[in-house]
Amino acid sequence: MTQPQRPNIVLILNDDMGYSDLGCYGGEVQTPHLDRLAAGGLRFSQFYNTARCSPSRASLLTGLHPHQTGIGILTYDSGPEGYAGNLNRQCVTIAEVLKSGGYRTYMSGKWHVSSNLRQPTDSWPMQRGFDAFYGTIIGAGSFYDPNTLTRGNTNVEHEAREPGFFYTDAISDQAARYIREHHAARPDQPLFEYVAYTAPHWPLHAHDEDIAKYRGRFDAGWDQLREERLNRLVAAGVLADHWKLSPRDPSQPPWSEAEHKGWLLRCMEVYAAQIDRMDQGIGRILQALEDTGRLDDTLVIFLADNGACAEDIPEDVTIDELVDKLMIARSHTRSGEPVHFGNDPDRMPGPENTYQSYGTAWANLSNTPFRLYKHWIHEGGIATPLIFHWPRGIQAQGAIRHTPGYLPDIMATLLDVTGIPYPVQYDGRSVLPLEGSSLRPAFDAEVEAERRPPMFWEHEGNAAVRIGRWKLVRKHPGPWELYDLVTDRTELNDLAAAQPDRVREMAAQYEAWAARCGVKPRDQIVALMRSQGVTRAFWEDE
Ligand SMILES: [Ca+2]
Image (cartoon, rainbow, N blue to C red; front, top):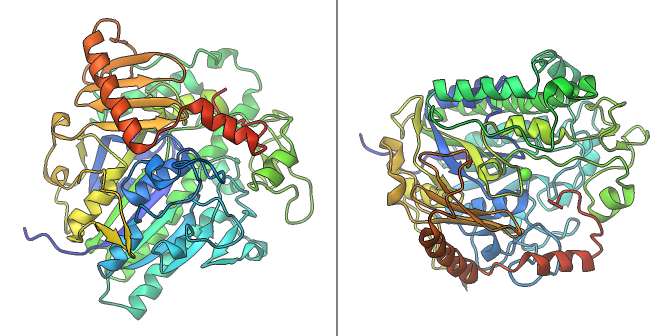
């Protein structure tokens, strides 16, 4: 088969979703459009993100590690080198590279790799290779009235005042519109589109009709549902049957003893509805590709930016923190009602005047069968679904690949399939060498874990290195743990004490990587955040 050159590329990322929420990854959420992509393409079982919104986006967009791009943690301003909070000039984005190779480039959704939220800078999308941009510069905003809504370089928050506005729909519809307009104006030019949903990141906002679809679906509770998910994942061939379900998070009660069940169930129903709404929109994007005759020659990629999020939004969180300092929330709805912040079990989530999260126990379900969550480098923090769909380029239909990979591989893969070289220089400046490895060989067959270079991660002191079957991982400030992922993907049997030589050798490789990529000690970074007035960070693991 002759490999076609320069397919259209639609890269879809979502926000804070667990490994096993999608229907095609064992979950209860109805995701027929993503399931259809999986059935007509490939699902990867061991793909990893970078545990947090901004670092994952930075790594995905550039093919580098987050600290190399200036996005060591989030987008707080004026940090030291590697933590400046702005995509720096020693990296190039996928959009910049594909544009130089003849692509027209579009983005719809959340950017979150720039510290300046009001004034366009050279780390905003239009200055980083995108021909068109619609979305938000920051994340975690109201789905009804998102902060920093921007078109090109212009703030368009007023557009959310249109009747019926909902951010997930707006992202989908703009993405579909870009495809149709592109095809009408440039029928022969390939397009690259980056669609970055904020669903299902908190706040828990969703439509009543979508929430209603899930009424009763989670009534069995997290303990039984975790077992059901693992069984489905094993039956589908995504996970091996000898991997044990991790125990329920020790901080959480058995479902039978949980309080406020009505409110808890509504939280999970709204979370499911957020993903459902995204999938509906993906259906409209696929329809635009079909209607323009491009679907068969489009590489569609879907993944999540980090594992499920266990953060509780405290009831005493202040408007000063959420609205003024972080600029993520709104103090009032569009009709002038006050927004009630925090996980108050007497107030059901979903409407515009609420701002809640679904909490640890449901995140534990979302990440079935793994341990831990967003922020950590254990499998629950970084394992993501990854779907590839490309009828003219990928022959396998509905196959699973256990080939490991991580975010820098996406840039490498896209350059591989398009034949566009990674630049040594871009726009007169030197660019760091690409860190990823192409996943293209896995389009045809499994690639053994031992055949790829080591993978490294660091986020807020949490860290890991994976070499072949072995993963060395650390939960800050704890010691290194060692797992054999062939026998123990759910990280239940720590072999560090039994294999000190392997721990020493892998830790040395990690330290060399951390030094090379500019990783700074966590305490230094936290002190910096404090000095900038970030007085309480409820999104942190402390
Ligand atoms: Ca995220």
